[in-house]
Image (cartoon, rainbow, N blue to C red; front, top):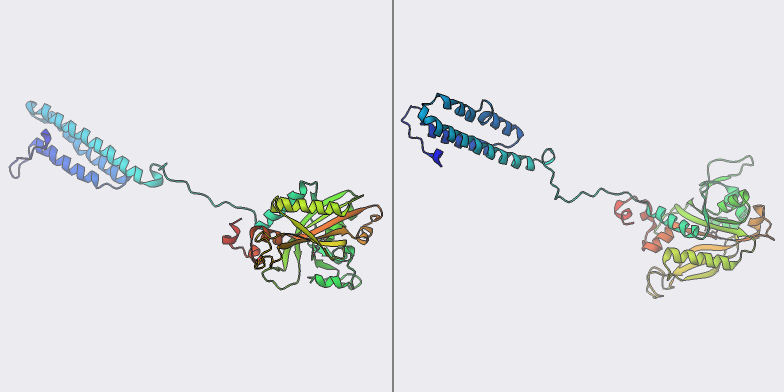
Length: 359
Ligand code: DAH
């Protein structure tokens, strides 16, 4: 290129014009490649190509040259200006695209996933259970966790001296009624809601009652001092044990899958007669004697149930000659443990995200 001519000036004198252009170009280029940010770019622009920048001044000096030199020098200085402007634009886009938020956005980066909240596995299981019954026409109710002894025990056909009270290790509240009885407690099961609902409405009744219960027990892999139950109650004229079996079987198929099998065996609960325990087939084996989940039986118990005891109906003000009903109660943690193969109930309440985020 014409302007790359090496300066040929003698020592101490002004270098020839072409040489001044070449020197300015070298200087401006190396200053440009040393710029690192927007401030540096602005400074560079002021210094070289701005209104009083060196290249601009060089161009203005054309008029003071001898006439025969003006054209060639003017062209060379203009080329320099254009060339530096192009280099500036290039450098500017390099710097801004590397500058992050203040500069260009890299649309090719993959997105950041926010951590999404979710329902606690027990809440999810409660909803699954209540909606399985909801599909069969059952309404969901809730009741008090701090309960009167009268509902928790007496109304459920467990009088004060009844040995069945030993089944329920109870947290009593530090408060006595006029007779000096300790009459307020943390409910040991959701069954007292059967009595509260029957007292407040007439049959037909079809309800499910999820809720937290408390027992004064040592904790281990299968016991917590607080846990959830879902109570089931249906009362009407002509309800039979066949309704109990059909309803609970359908529930099991909804929650454990259509292949689920159920087994009913006699059991005792003071508030039902006859009473049963319902089991579902072991999800882990087919009756393998070595299975540690069902201990070789092939069955896993999931709830107590039975026909509502005539005494419970009578205490609630219903005529047991006219109405019959069935009831059931299940532990929600147990259902969740069987569904998901969880081996320790304490995981549910340890608030460990590594556990909770699996559900
Ligand atoms: N309330 C019982 C318990 O906590 C469970 C139960 C058994 C509830 C049989 C029922 C029933 O409604 O019919 O152990």
